[in-house]
Image (cartoon, rainbow, N blue to C red; front, side, top):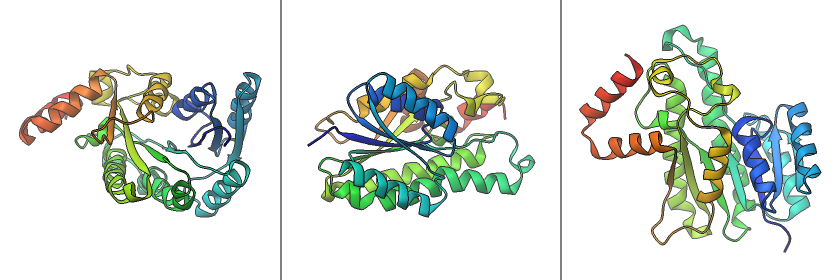
Length: 260
């Protein structure tokens, strides 16, 4: 039957890189994809040097042709697609009106349209692999709209909704769809980000924390279906508060946290 497989976007750095190394170290054949060819080559050298197996390729998640080609290549070599990790993402922080419209559009294109496109094109491969899973990187910023992260949080809210819908739709195909919810993670994506929420909450997670969370979430699920997996104490606390507190209280907390 061969090794189980995982296909990871945005794998050259940060959470994607940590996830690729984590799964490779646990006997998965890793598909690592990104627009950063140099970062991919360094990752591949580290995985193969440790005795793992990896396939790499250039993938711009906004490009449907790239998606089609990389998925077909990966499946042709492996014959299966056990886990798709939609990790690629970009972030711009600041007051909504101070960010160029083109930058807002790019955030939408990468963070949401990229997930939608890749998941749609991966369906046939997932359907034909028993027990396949899709892992979408969400964010605690989607729990309630975050000041200075408006379009980023909006894309993650859209990913949340897409995840929930597909987990219901694709159960009949034996495909599980889940969302991973970290707060701020110490990666290049948040380097230099200075918002009210980063100042008040800090950056308390590292990429390895999220990789470990993805691994645990993709193990045999419990009897009660679970879709959302918060990473870290802060994200868990915010999620519980959002679930049980009245909306005015959630808004007040977010206003305080973001200094808005």
